[in-house]
Amino acid sequence: MIHEHIKTRTKARLYLHDYLSLCRFLNHKPSTEITRDDILGYLATIRKPLSAEPKQRWINTHSNRAVIYLKFCKWLYFPDLSLKERLTTAAVKDLPIMKREETNVQAVDLWTDDDAYSIFLKY
Image (tube, helix red, strand yellow):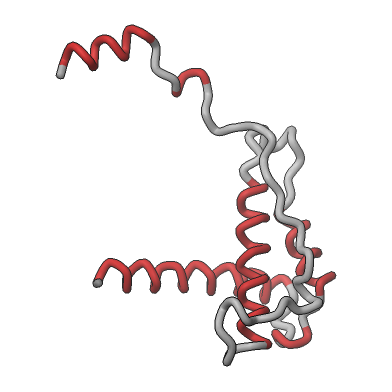
């Protein structure tokens, strides 16, 4: 029970941090006046060229923040409804959720036959 409370508080803190980043970018524009272009403009600042970040980690940040803004706007406009009943507002409708093309697993992360045998024989 305590662990769930800590997870919820940590998640709320992270969501708040990401929302404050958007607010700073928009010079503290009121939440009800935020438009789709405002959110897309902020998400564009997260984008990095492939030469600067070959592993494309920015894509996860971009997608996670898009989901956070989607949830926040649904809550902002429909706070009395349940999560499933809340409608998507125009500001966050069809925000781009990206996925990386490559995997995080690299050749050095994989086990060799020698590794597998040594662990098997050890235990």
